[in-house]
Structure formats: C-alpha cells, structure tokens
Image 1: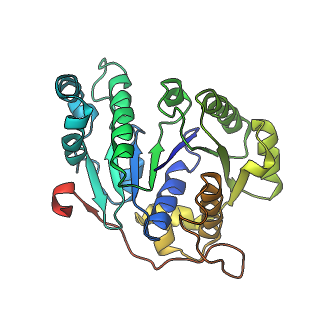
Image 2: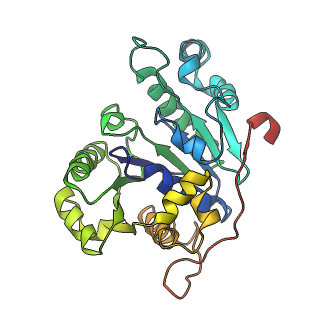
Length: 286
C-alpha cells in the first residue's frame, strides 16, 4: 500500500485535487482509502456525503481511546472503520476524523493518533493499493508525526509568497519525518513560469513541481455540488489533473502496476468514463 499525505495552506485547491485523483485512480480499478483529517471535512462533502451523515472519530474519541487501550488496535479497528467511514459509489473508502465539537475541548491529538494507528492497521490488511491523508491546513499535522516514512508528500500551493512559505515549511517537516518523495502542485497558475517561480520560493527541485491552470470550470462544478471530472471532463483543469496523477504515480514507483493509462493526443492520460459518486455506509456496502 502506497501512502500519500496532502499538505499545504488552506484554500489552495487541496480538496479539488485530491477528490479528482482519488476518483481517477478508483475508476482504473485501484483500491483507495482516504483519511480525512481536515476539520472542515470538505473532502467528504465533495463526494456528496452530507456533513452529518456519518459519526466522526472526534465525536467518539473518548470511547475509541478506551477501547483501543483495553483491546488493542487489531480488535478495535474494524468497528472504528465500520462506524466512522463511508464508501463512495466508486469504491473509495473515506475515514472521517472530524473537528473539535466545543470550545475548550482541547486539541485533536488523540484523534490524529487514532488515524495513525488505523493507517498501520489498514496497511497490514493488504486490501488497499493507495492510502491518502487529507491533512488539515498548515504544517501542524506533520509536527505530530502522522506522515512518518510515507511514500509521498503531495504539497498543494498557489503561486503566491504566503502559500509558498507554508509549502516550504511542510516540505522541510516531511523530509524530517523521512517521507520518501515530495511533489508540489501549483494550483491556479496564469502562466507556465508560475511553476518555476514557486519552486524557487519553496526551494524544491523544478522536476518535482507541476502546475494546474486556473479554470472557471472548477468554480462551476463546486457551485453545482458536482465532481469536476464528471461534469467537465474536457476542461483544462482536468487535463492538468491527469498529468498530476501521472506524476504522483511516477513518484510512488507504480507507473506500471498502478494506473498506466494510455495517453491522448495532448500527452495526458486518457479520460475514464464519467459516473457520479454517491455515498454508501459500510453496512449498506456489505
């Protein structure tokens, strides 16, 4: 199982990028599990999962911690995954950490620790090809060691100074944790030179940076509550997202085994058939 963490400043297109990557991989037959550790839970909502459709780990963190302490993660994990995840129509499993419920409730430390244990358990199962962690905005989650020895730090950014500073921080922290490779995705670029300029600001090799053009189709899909690859499969943004997917697969060393889609005339991997994803609970998916 290849492990990828998506990091970066808030509002840089992380959710849009991740949802498209998950969708493309799943539709090529890959088994994908996503751990949504962003308290905003935008990733789940992007897949049509209502905000209150599934119980989050933070809602039950006390009971979960007690159960793990008493029985161990091997016994506790199946029930945690059953109660705190959903399965999309395309077979993507989304595990939802959740947010702090009330002022004064403390930090998300125990919930993040639970996610780390679930990741280890999932890897041991051998059922999934790809595990992605949608991290909360900023570098904090890396400070808690969640991505230790992951295969890829997927850094989402914009061609701005402020966004690049956060990207520089998460690049360093990922390296400190032993993440095997890094790939920076520069969203909403106006010109190709934006990628090289941002790479210079972040201090990452230019061959580890790739851009996604600004595209109004992204805004239109979000307003409509639809998945971008389904409603605008021929858009510039989706073409660039296919290139990002190919770059991700090259970084994690699975270009043959995972998603070696044939290329179209533009050099991007060819599109897969469109199908809207709705959510199913683990019980109804059985």
